[in-house]
Length: 151
Image (tube, rainbow, N blue to C red; front, side, top):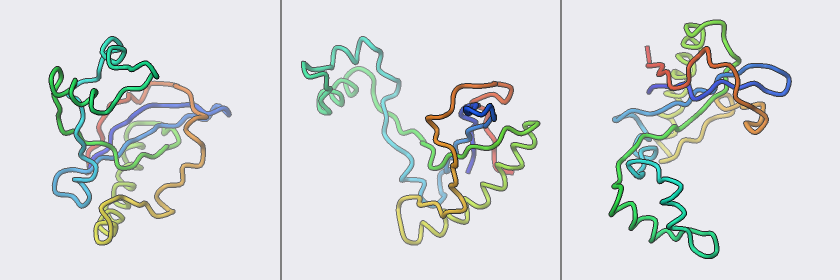
């Protein structure tokens, strides 16, 4: 399991948070459920416009045919869990918090894998107390995209 910093954000009270996404690795329970087929790159605005019908919708068949012919598909890992951490003083402090969460997530994933193909976090693992819509982009001292590998 590994984690990647997604963004830093500030809520309306001025409190800073770091969003960290957690990913499963091959061989871990539930991994196959979070590895999905996606276009090899994002479609451009021009490509999306060309696929948009009169009602403003894009048909699934047209979309898939276009990607098949012009872009191609690839399998990508997607986050199975994300968490907002109060912005720590240092990256090392954040890493310590992430490592503790990874231990809890691993235990929960192993338990979930016995009964389900989908991650269903227990209450202690997912208390996102502030709605994501209340956040705005903030400080970037802790750089988004930084991977925090399991210790």
